[in-house]
Length: 388
Image (cartoon, rainbow, N blue to C red):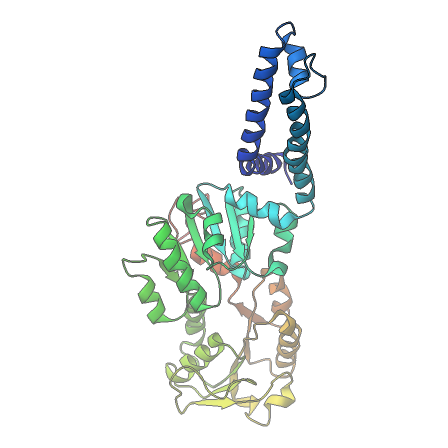
């Protein structure tokens, strides 16, 4: 932790103990005044030492004995208790990160820790922007906490956590969570606290976006999935042949729906978890409730010689090796098929390109698109302006 963060933490700790320190000072002042009146021939230094019970007064009155009894107790409980608590707190970075977050002013608050949120955090760190993070999963923000960054660990919908985030003096808020309920509750509670700050909410559903755009909330909803869909629409425009879509989440289903309905192409959706999709299913869409890790899993359902495009949309990081393996096999056996692989980290792009595959839904691309909708005073607004 930097020196500045240490000073901030110490300052906040003292503020928490201000009543106790005020009590200690008043008791000392009372003793000093009493000894100044009863020990008229003592100089100020001697009176100071007597008031601290380092020296004994010449007149051993009842008050002097009582003061000599209670002063060491107060000194031990308040001063030494404060010092011991401060030392113990050094070994509890969660508490320290929470205190640092409470001290932030004119800052950016990031709620959540998905890939896009991590990109926003990295951008703030690299550009020395003032920020804090709210996340209820400690594993996802463990590195931030251990490195001394301001993190509020807990439920972002909890009023106590929102209060610690100092939302009255916030510059902007990014809500990047997958749970629609949490996003809506956070937006409503934040807007009650701060009527002016921009709230950027990652929301997929159109009706929820329209709801959050109302004057009551005045939020800026956006969807990284829709940004990816715009790219996929361009890839499919004017193409023919059958399409394979592999995955199991909402973005996967939307791709399958758009390609089959909007582009009127035979589409084969491999989803090993669901037996239906959230959208109206056209007769061009064939849902296969089976796993598709190998070409041998796919061949019984579709003639691969008639396929022209494959979208591999697995979301879990643990499945990237399977996606890469499948892309390599498609490239080796069917080099005429266009392959598209969904990834989150740009570090993986070169691995995918090795097999002549394209990538989509990367967090860096989402950050760049998000930078186009934020206000110029935003922490993530590019230093050189937006590239059109």
